[in-house]
Amino acid sequence: MTPAPSAYHQRVAQEKRALIVQAATELFLELGYDRASLARVADKAGVSKATLFKQFPTKAALFDAIVIDSWAKNDVAEVPPAGDLTAGLTVLGRRYASLLSRPEMTDLFRIVIAELPRFPELARAHFAQGKLPYFDSVRIYLLAERDAGGADIADPEMAATQFLGMISNYLFWPNLLLPDWTVTPARTTAVVEEAVRTMVARYGTDAHHPNRPGKEPSPRTNR
Image 1 (cartoon, rainbow, N blue to C red):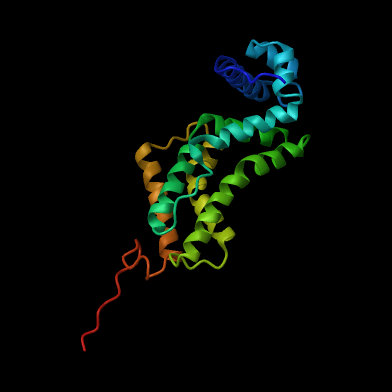
Image 2: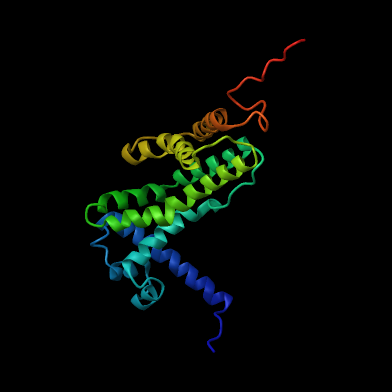
């Protein structure tokens, strides 16, 4: 029976994995996915080819790791509890904004776009391993709010797309195309808050959110 690796060896393996993923990302950007061989990645990361192949037997597996690592930050898959639509969407919106603001996320999209004509499987991996799990966490949250009576949503997939789109269309896509595009932390906060207000105004229910943003309280009638 093979003994389990010690804590030291696990830490060393994790450190080498991080070096490999970082080196691969830089080489994919510099040379393109096709020209960035695994041998070059190993050399740039300062590890042996055997070490690299042990963790990533193929270039596709290495790209999958880059995608998963990029999207996995900030506990993006953790779904807030239902019961307060404004609070839940704010948590999800802030996580998404933080994620999109990371330079490595922009780099990842650039790799996918640059290699899309020759390697369409990269885009499919990016969606399946990265965007889809996060999208599903938002959809699942909206479903939970609907089931709890906190939201009136006929199409949770559409609603999740709307919410994420309001944030990414300001914070991410201009940054991908315009090198001088900058967004201050205050502006980022405002973008998320406005997206939340729009969603709550559109989908929130009076029973759970009588004073939700964007809607005046119902006037009382004296009888």
